[in-house]
Amino acid sequence: MSENWTPEDEDRLRRALRDEASRVMPSSGGLERIMARTRQQAPRPW
Image (cartoon, rainbow, N blue to C red; front, top):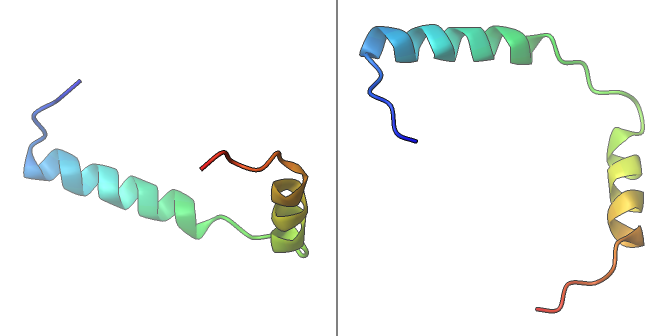
């Protein structure tokens, strides 16, 4: 689906996303947990 966004809409969305992203606090050991999960997945056929 394609929408026509005005520059004002784009700016408003950009600011809202930036505000939300600034509140994210990564937890300790998060990267290690992600890496452990990806090692458990079956290898890709490619």
